[in-house]
Image (cartoon, rainbow, N blue to C red; front, side):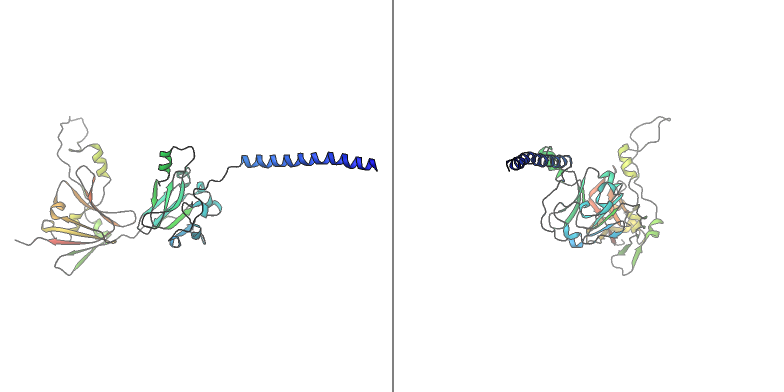
Length: 323
């Protein structure tokens, strides 16, 4: 009997330490595994769904993604809403974002360009949801760096359409060319200026000022009184002179003013003197989306900040009375 108790006691002394050792080893192993795995970083704690997200449409490789908008919260990353390859931001070939205001962004090689950035949803002043490109914030950053990281490098406000491509997307169709309706005060007839009508007009060119410097015969041709930087800026401006477009209806010298209206309700008025001024260039141009816009280009190649209108749809001409 004593031997049996002794054996039981001995077995107890042998088993308990072994069990403790096993548990300790298992705990150490688990802790070691956790230590080697990166911890996920959450930008912001989950919160209520953002207002207006039900209008957002998300597509991956041309196919709509269902049941994701209700998961959008403040500072939710776009990649976290997607599955498969699309959930890996580095695999994105193209990212396209557009908003209700007409603002848009389309980035090729998005995975490479945004490798060190986050694409996050957030609310903007006045309401609405924007999608922006943010630099990740880390604890080692200075306060100034953290403040910069809290602001998007680029963004699209009132976002309503998002495309993510992990495959080569099909070529985009050419956008339809917007037309311009031209009327003259006091007349009922209208002229609709389309792409063909504009293409028949000469391209707008701002006349160079006379050269103020003397050059030798072996020197390159003069750029007039402008600097090379001005010439580079001017070379980017391609379109048609607004004076020539108005001239499809009336003689330019009879123009007293033109009144331009945009689709969104914006307005711009230019006098006949501004259209005829040789030192400036009132230009109408077509953007990549086929919309028409008006800018006044100054002599140094810069745009006049107070004379700009986008998505122009109509122009009303006021003529001078014949003397």
